[in-house]
Length: 105
Image 1 (cartoon, rainbow, N blue to C red):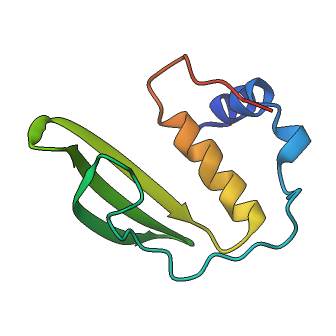
Image 2: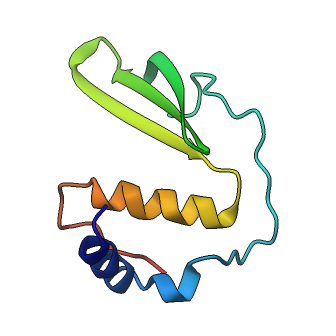
């Protein structure tokens, strides 16, 4: 990500308010995996996981009933620290193509 893009995203999403900090303390999530029951009304089709640097990414594909024309992709990013998680979040936001994404308090 280019420096100007990162600066824009940090300002747009008020990164100074949350970056490097966690209001929930040290929460650890170990061994996360999709079971198939997480999304009511959706069927888990497949899960792929990969390691990209310090981040593990679980990519899942879901369908609703027998309608294979309606698919949902869910990605879970697992980071080694709060700081790394926030960097990963900014990278994910940089890759979004929608201008409609907003920060919710």
